[in-house]
Image 1 (cartoon, rainbow, N blue to C red):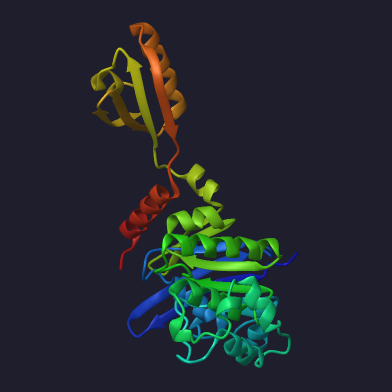
Image 2 (cartoon, rainbow, N blue to C red):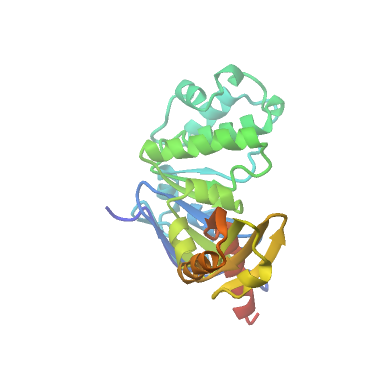
Length: 308
């Protein structure tokens, strides 16, 4: 099945600032793809070029099999978009907004069905200015689905929401995938990307610096794993520091914590050390690097390599 989105060497400049510099990635049909990066990385600009809100300076954009730069109006018929904030007239109601937005499309969903899907039936006739932040975001999603889109683009949809509203929105995004939609999600929340996305592209300073499934990026990372060790009687940190690959050793109460980039070698040496000293192993926890640690490591490296 052909990719739903193909971005090739996308570039966009604002005056003297090059916001996007040769960005390339592809999104397969039916997956949730995340554009992950710090504020100002180029995520929103990339999305706005895809949906036709910005004119790209250079590069190729293919959306749902169409050249998005040549056929922006046809692309808009096939996609749904929810931007960072939804600004509607204060007195318009969700029902009225859905009818109004639906009038712009050849194919449209019934407002009642969208109100029910996004838990807005009770607020169908409430004024927009009376809706909570979570309700406004659910309305934004409903508006994005008004034309029964093949592709849904969500620009930092959970920014500013409380934890409960974030969980509700996460459930909706996962339901989009189960319903067969392809989703492009921009976010700077690492946990959100790890939980929701099949694959991600990490973008920093306008460039893609890594692409892959979250687990793949973690597995490929050179970021070391963390180890927590408790023995009876206790082991001194100096002995642990002598293990091959061990670093950042510190004692915290009865536990000794350290990091290692060579866990198999380090743990084999640790087992031999415990046996030689006749120490009983009470607790041993080994944690792989988190996506957050990988992200920080990659963006730091990219900053160091950037001559600008």
